[in-house]
Image (cartoon, rainbow, N blue to C red; front, side, top):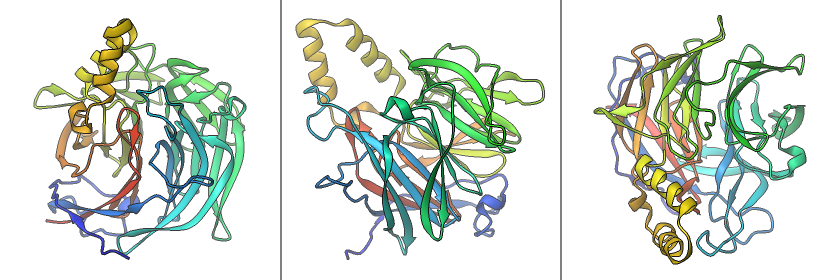
Length: 383
């Protein structure tokens, strides 16, 4: 086995408070101690069943079990032909359970679901991982799956159905209820929010996220008892943010995603909850490049369209200028800050998991149509 190498990056940040999510490294995560993140390559995700190799996937199911195991699965890529050449997107039914063994992510179990999945909403709780919607099978695109450990093996159960199909939405968990937020609902971009009661299996529509009628690929977390939703997009990328109040079923605007007065798109990014007041975000399409591409791909014709497609899909990952900042949002101060940059191609649609003082970034898209099979481990240590 090759020696795992450390990619050079030190990202300094202060976490404003800690909770049980991060309690297994209390000294390092004390809010008064400066931090840095050391990144290393944790390996490559093995091939899916029936495939010669894994070329990487985006739109993954992701989460953790028993505060020890990393679970990732499904997702999509273009295994036969590139997007430029009209390649078909393929989704997968493979789910992997991994364990970090001295900086190497080893596969503990590899199973296949009944349906291929991708671009659903993943929510990790103390009891297990919920995966909502996100299937290439229309009959399963409204499923709510629950992934747990049973006799130390992965156990996947369908526990309910939404009243609509869901792709590219987000969700949070609170008091035995799932809150399904925006995304493509019933095949159409939406701003709607639903509460799904896990006990009664009943859904209730809540006040929609303001400002835009369609918001897909946003980021969301439950902080200080409120839902926070940021960015996403449709024909253009957004940089706005909103907070939901459960008591009166209302939304209010909070700070835009920005650094140094410059807006940052988190469209396609993924977040983790650090503690009760903070969330960490990695990724996000560049707004100017995304907006321009959507416009040109939708309006140009003939040789002009062919030329634009060639230049766009043939560009290198760095030319897309995706957000490489590791961002922290603090709900108490309503502010954004950066703790440095990822030392690898900025991913979108990756699996992002926090266990103790370690952050795991699994696969993801690194340019339109191209994924990575690499898995990265970020270790938070005292400066």
